[in-house]
Length: 102
Image 1: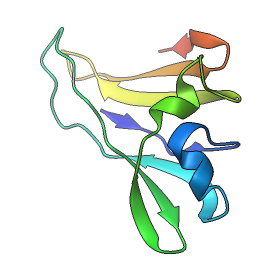
Image 2: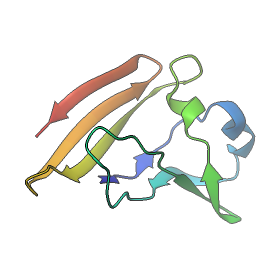
Image 3: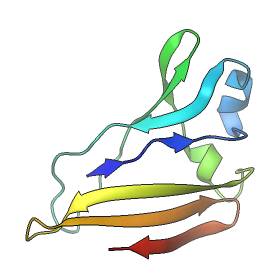
């Protein structure tokens, strides 16, 4: 499973202190090689800054209680038959919505 990089706009929560240090405001997610059906797993997000990559607490920026905007997350994965699939999720200040899948 792979999540495409996300262009961050206004960051929320603890990231607001980094606002001036973030270059390009891009969150990059580590890929997940295997996930059992019905299982859950955390995914780490990294952000490029003038000091290099940092661990990014992306949650405040997508939590409807704190988010300042919406973000589209494009998730690519294979189903149990090995077919390539994708799901686009809009998440942020307006909540969570599945935009498309295929």
